[in-house]
Amino acid sequence: MIMELIKTNTLNFYFEPSKSELKKGSIVFIHGLDASPHYFFLINKDLSDYDCYFVGLPAHGLTPINNKKDLNIKVFAELFINWINEIDLKEFHLLGHSLGAGIASLVSFIIPQRIEKLILVCPYHYQYLNPFLNKKLFNAWVLFPNPFLKFKTDVVLKKLYIDYRNNYKTLIETRWESISREYPRIARDVLFLCLSLLNIKINHELKMAQRNLIMPTLIMVSRHDQLIDFNLAIKVFKNNNKVNQYIFNNSGHIPFIEEPKLFTNILLSFLEDRFVEQEENDNNDINEK
Image (cartoon, rainbow, N blue to C red; front, side):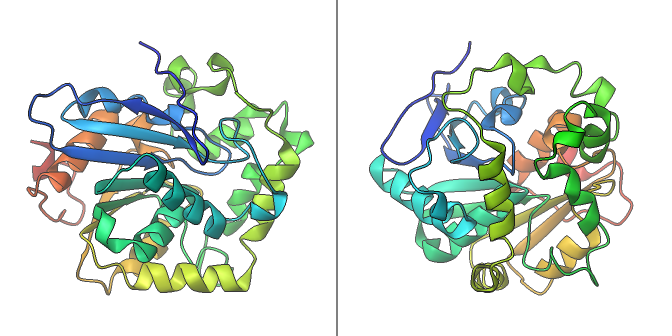
């Protein structure tokens, strides 16, 4: 069944209620740059013990833009907080992917008392734009609005998936062309959002947030991610004893599409306090069972 977009004064979102009489909590999902919540829809069916909220960020076709000056992750974090206040969501687990993980980090720093557990998937982080540290930085050019890539789908998708022909091509429900946008997606707005990441003040706030996470946190990265250097992402968070990590060995930038069953197993093991730290080069992790 297709979920109906719920409109609010802040962020528009999709909602999938728990199907269990013994609901275990709520999970809020924040999507990444130039994406939509729809790519999470492969895993929500395995999260039936939880209420699941999927927000649509401004400039991505589901929530309108009120002011183009607000196209930055700091304002998005503030808008997210206004949204949870509007719908009266008290405490919840928060999952952010890619740029959405950067937004989730800021939210968790501002209102830590509301976040039960934090999950950052292939996270954008404060060292991402450092060309001396980030080996994958220049791969990110494929995400910028570019008319020359309009008819070169393969170029973009090969940066997102290990094998997109067996993932993106066959999983119609995760793709924009099967979904009607509520508002026009303007490439210039996405470009403004990308350029805002160069703001030194915002990056400093992201650094403070990601260095000072106080809630149980799981960093999920992919060994074959062509956009996020998984070693650098782990290094950014490694000195925080609240942070656990998991490395996917057979995924690119979107592990919940390429390895959805494993992804939900790891996610649930963390949410349900049975996560065991992954051993190096362990392809048969205890969390899968």
